[in-house]
Length: 104
Image (cartoon, rainbow, N blue to C red; front, side, top):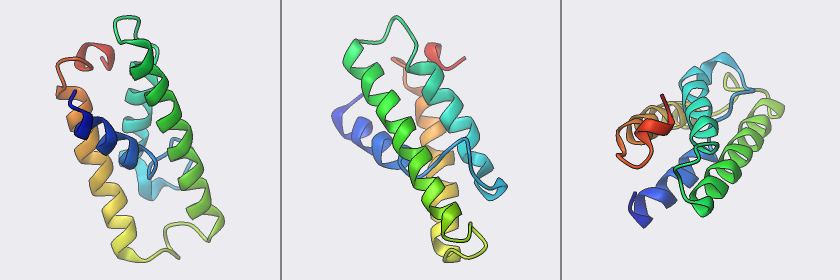
């Protein structure tokens, strides 16, 4: 995975969480895949650490949205952005040759 793709993944992971309102269901799969990949023994330790930190940050971000009234009270553009970003990053995570085997 390129350095740019890694940072993109970090940023998007910060926007998604497994503990959040159902409006972010797209992020459930992303969180699960990131957490699974973070335990993959074939990934370098630094990559696993980044994935773990990203998953933790994304959960905190969605918790903030939830505490702010949830996606129904968030700007619709933000909700759409988060959902679309999670979809795109999940696709990237699943198709990255270095991570794909770790997310299945």
